[in-house]
Length: 304
Image: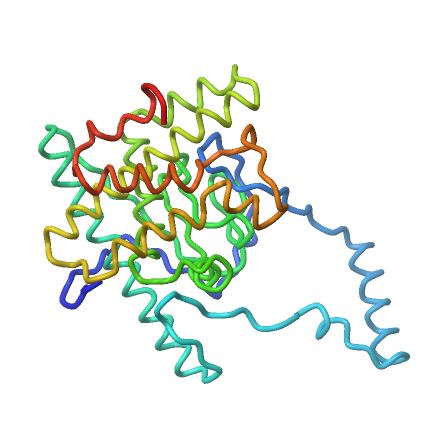
């Protein structure tokens, strides 16, 4: 991608390196993060911990705090080299923030134009860049959850270490692959503004798990199609470079439900799919990219 000279969005909330210790909200959103936060500790429990720590520290020579701290968190990005130099890591974080904010800004421009053509106003979402864990209105955000959109606070949550995982674990690196991830979550925001997510969230209350999963697949594939629409406009602006489209399609393939299940467990369980197969994700991103039209992204009618 050639983002040189492109504007940066001012809708970025960069909280990397910070700790959010407030209560975790439990919203009725889409892509709700899993996991249940641990409750607080009583004074008695903390006192017991303190005694155990002192015994281990001075009697056994074991520093529990050092053991619990683990390795420093990695800084990541598909096209951003890692460094042990703090100054370099700071520069790398700045590059990552610039990249994310430029991609977000381009989605803002694209969807503002599309909504304007429909006589509607596009409400620009906030994007929260965090590291490790953070609290959203839909629950706890963590690396295990991956990027997601929370309709309750209308924010996209992104742990940029996910880009590193795409590159190293899923062989889906590349700047346009990373941009596709952002555009997909923004696609959920578009669905929210159009009333699609609220209808789904209401309907799934009366669905079985299998039915809800099947409908979730259609919602996710539409977000892929919306991401493809954004990709079409980036192409028209001359932002895309040779190989960029292939990067996004490869990412769509690598993070399909069937591909992930084969990698994780060695077999697939179609009834548990929530995002679509590799072939489906590639198909719908390509459809949005080829047409650039919302009308082409009706994943709720007929076969997918």
